[in-house]
Image (cartoon, rainbow over the protein chains, first blue to last red):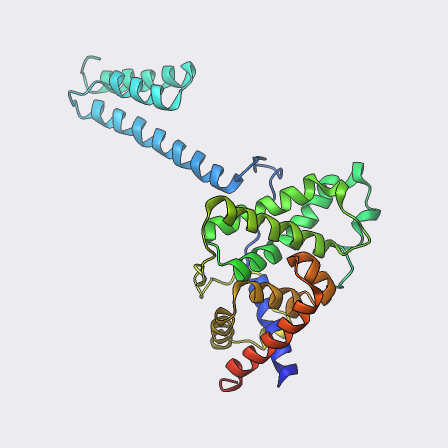
Length: 107
Length: 188
């Protein structure tokens, strides 16, 4: 029975190990090399990026539907929080301009 | 895997300059799942912490590869790093190791993986039964069980990895077998 236990345990761990999906190694194409708690950092970065996208989209939607809240205010808020580059801000302002033009509203 | 063999051959013979990237990929591919299961079985981390610690173990091993003594099996070295990081993790956060395994029992089988003959012997019911039996063991005994049953690491090396006397390991293996056998006996 003990030999059977040995075999079963070996088979169990073999199965468990085989079932672990191996993520791409850091440094492989498209996978950034991050130090420290890298997986946590990646999740945090992804979360921050998602937040920016939601904030920007919210601003765009507000302009599209003619809400009172100006996009500039949203931009200042997310710029302050996420330190957006001038290029990114310029791109968002351009989007604002396009939507303002399409919907006949002012800035 | 051989008790004294390195991943995919003997890493010490690999050219450090020409094959560093390849070496890291080999270490990553071979040891990521092993370290992951070792940490999961032995410490009961959450999935996110498991991913962090597994990755940290492999990055640390790679960054300190110069300190690896090829007299010992690379697996011994890797599990030592993993164990030390896990202990540090608990020390820093002053948390006690969870007794229960927080990773779901029914993990999806990744597609495209071939089943080994040994793995084919185990159906899902048996896997859950063994997992339950393991949870009866103390965390350190689960670490011993993994290193002994799966990696077949000699008792002396297990003692070095876990930093306990070799005699303790011998006794614990005897006890672990007794507990597991009694738990599994009625279900086989």
